[in-house]
Amino acid sequence: MNLTIENILLVGSILLFISIIVGKSSYKFGVPTLIIFLAIGMLAGSDGIGGIIFNDPKTAQLIGIVSLNFILFSGGLNTNWSNIKPVLKEGIALSTMGVLLTALSLGTFVWLVTDFTIYESMLLGSIVSSTDAAAVFSILRSKNLALRTNLRPTLELESGSNDPMAYVLTIMFLTLVVNQDQSIVSILPMFFQQMIVGAFAGFGFGKLSKIIINKINLDFEGLYPVLVIALMFITFSATDFVGGNGFLAIYICAVFLGNQDLIHKKTILRMYDGLAWLVEIVLFLTLGLLVFPKKIVPYIGVGLLISLFLIVIARPLGVLISLIFFKMKFRRRLYISWVGLRGAVPIVFATYPLLAGVEKADIIFSIVFFISVTSILIQGTTLTIFAKWLNVGMPEETKKKTEIDQLLSNLPKSSLEEFEILPDLFSENKRIVDLNFPKSAFIVMIKRGKEYIRPGGSTEIKAKDILMVLADSEEDYTKVKDCLYRRDTTKKTEA
Image (tube, one colour):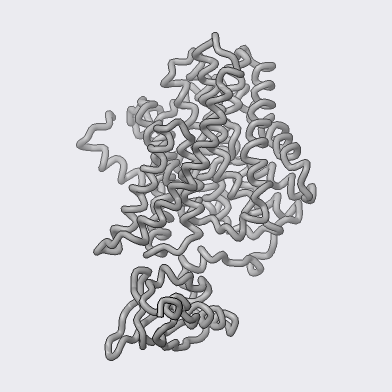
């Protein structure tokens, strides 16, 4: 079956429906949902029972880049700064030095066991050098693992921030494969430009995006998530246009926004949570369709050998060396090395050699695909088992909910109190989003005279308003009082 404009929506929606239904029950058998989506795509492909002919790496790459934008941005929005701050140095070390060491060690091994040139080997190593954000976010959250001593923030920070490093290494070695006359030294400036410009652009666009979201006055709440999507793509495209790393920029931008007070933040977070799942399914289905199982079979042996070396030696080596200067128990380091999941990102990166016309591009793609599948099957299904073996897991009831979890789940509070806004208070004539209101409490209603107002981030508080606030403890209410009842010293100064 050839995909046409007339049938693509029908075929796509059927595959999406099947993926959701099958994925819902897959965890009963311990199989990660991502591998199910990939398998469904392969079964629907030209070598499967569906017979859908799809052999367009360019379209697959476009879908991959768009999907990675949503996945990284969603992961960034759900990253709590207070959680990752204690492990920021470890996360950066893993996402830079760890990725580099993994790429170099695996590339060297590939060079020794295959007929690849050194640059082709390093290209393959670079493509699979990063852990996959989609796989890690999805599997950790689906399994709902409770991990000890900041392990979870470390793993999510690493997976969300190490794709840019792998992307830069992939582009660097792809350049060397295509342009044999160039040396590594000649492309080092590109590496530093990508990372530095990407980091600064991400922070700059994050601050600008916050101003735009909170200052622009849209008439409909549903437009705010659309606005954020536009800002996300502007951040990626503009950064890439000036020579920076767009993936790094959107992740940093999202982390910044996720830790700020934004208008309709709950709506934005919920929409991105759903969109992240949608693009993950679409991405894995697309990559499944792109794969021709008959082409992979001849490389199963070498693919398994390379995959085992990556899981058992290259990944642990990269983790242990990059964390050598940090105080951390050895079993924690081992668990971090085991959560080296490869997923859709390496397969997307493997389309770059295909489009560049590299001689061994088909072989590289087949091996990368096999590595991703075996990683999800071997590591993804054993995360809970290894957490118990290494004693890094906690009972589920002891797991703490983050502020993002609380915001998304609408947790009921135990008590309700009213706060009257008096003239000359700091909170008078301020929008709720500008108050820095405690995240542990919620304004559920505002009484203004005889009128009851449902509050939103853009709601402006007036004198004599009565705010009905839900919270759990006296400590929470003390924070609310400190926020609302501060005197506005600027008015006295002006008088």
